[in-house]
Length: 612
Image (cartoon, rainbow, N blue to C red; front, side):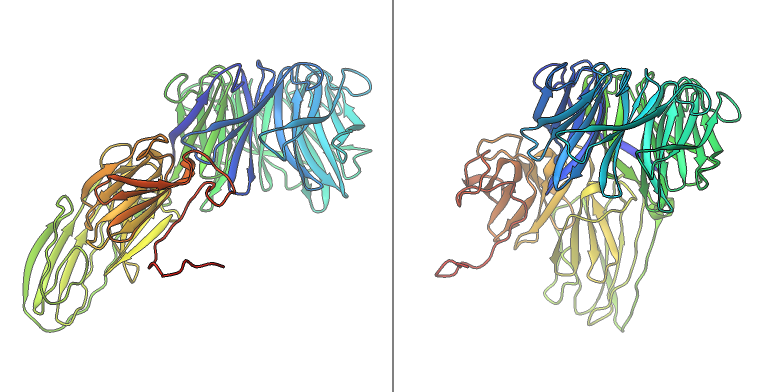
C-alpha cells in the first residue's frame, strides 16, 4: 500500500513567487541541494525553489515577462537538460508560441540565452506545448508539439544560444493524426530513436522514427475515442519499460499500451471513470515511480483537485490504490496541473491555488511486516525471578552484577524481565538471551508504520543499537545481532512524535537526544523510549533551530548542528542555551562561517589543536 502525507507548501501569484496559474514542475539537483522549477501560465513566469528541506520550500529566483526577451506568455511545459556541462531550462509558452532556453547553472540568477518562436511557416509553434529533449548521434535536439499548428517540431539546441529549426512533421487526420498534438516523449529502443505523440483532437497515438532528426518518418498510429482504443482527447503520456500509460480526458480513462513492437502499439489494459472512485476526468498522467519492485502511476486531476495513485505492477490491470485531494488548505490542490516525484517525495503544482505542495510518499512493503516476529534463544542452569519495566516510565532497574541491556537487568542468578511499548499498529518480537547464568528477557512493541527505509543515524549503547528511522518518523531499537527489540515515535508534532528525525546521541546517563528536524526541536528520552523533555522552536534567535540535523554530547553538554541556521549551538542536558558559534543565518566559506552544517561529533581536548 502507498500513501501520501502532506509536509510543506508555498503559495502566491505575482511577486515574489510567481505561481499564478501553476502549470508544470520538474526537479533539478546541484550537489546536495534540490530545486523545484515551476511554470506559471497566468503569471507568464518560471520560478526556482529550494526544496532540500521539503517542509519549508523557499524561493530562490524567478523570471517573468511576455514577448521579448523572455517569451513566457502562457508558460507551459518545462524540462532541464545539460549540454556541454551547462544546465539549461527549456520552456514552451503556449501564448507566445515559443521555445525559450535559460541558463540555470546559477539557480539564483537564471538568464535567457536563446529562443525560437512563430506561428505557421517555418517554425509552426502556434500553441507550443509538449516538450522533450535528448541527444541523438552527438547532437542535442528539442522536440516540441504545437497544439494549434498540429505539428511535431524538431529544433537543434546543440548551441542553446542559437536554437535552429531542423524540420517539422504534422497534419490533422491520416496518416500522421497530429490534430491538437499535445504530449511527446523521446525514447530509444534497440538502438533506434523514436518520438511518441498523443493528440487531443485526433484522439490518437502516433510513433515516428527520428533516428535521422532531419527526416522523421511515421512508424505507426492508433486512433479512436471509446472502445477499443480509449484515446478520446488523448492528453498525456507516462512510460515504464515497454508500456505507455495514456490519460484520455474525453474518455476519462487511463489506458495501458504495449509498445514492445512500435510498428503495432496495442492497448492491453485500462481503468476508467470520470468521478468517484477513480476521478479520471481531464487528468494529467504526469509521473511514475518504482518502489521495491512495484510500479505506480500518478495522475493529477484538474477538475476534482485530486491526486490519483494507480498500481500498474500488472500493466494489463491498472488498479486504484488511493486518492488524495482538496483545494485550499491544507493540501492546496485546487486545479492541480502537474506533479513530479523523486520516489521519496511528491511535488505538485496547482493552477487555481497558485501553489507548490509537497507530500511524503509512504509505502508499506508487505502487510506481513506489521505483525512479524523473530526469536533467539539459549539457556544455562539457574533459578529465575522476574521484574517488569514499561516504556511509559523513565526509570530502569539494575543489579550489582551484570546488566544485559540499558533497559533491563540481570543478576548472577537467573532473572526474567519484561519490556513493553506501544504505538498505533502491531509488531512483536521475542527472544531469550544468554548471560553468565540463565536469563530470559521478552520484549513486545508496536510501531506506527511497517514500512522500511534506510535509517538516518544510529547510536550504540551497551546491549542495544538505537537508530533514527527518518522516513518512518520513529526510533527503532535492535540488539547488537540485529534482532528487533522495540520502536517509539510516529509522524506528528506532539510529544514523542517526529517529523523527519535525522540524528541521535546518548549521554553518560543513557538518555537519548533526537534531532526532530521537521519540528525544529530536540527531544530527550530515557533509554526505554520514555519522553523526558524537548526544546527548540523555528527561528534564528539563541536557542531556536532551523532544520537541525546533527546532535552529539560530551556527557554534559549537548551540541546541535543548526543546519539552515548555519551555526552550531550548545545546550545543557535540560535544554538551556549555553552558547553558539558562527553567525546565525549566514552561510559562507570564511573560517568563521559554515554552510548547511550536518553531522558533528566530540572528542577529547588535546593540548594543541589538530592542524592538517
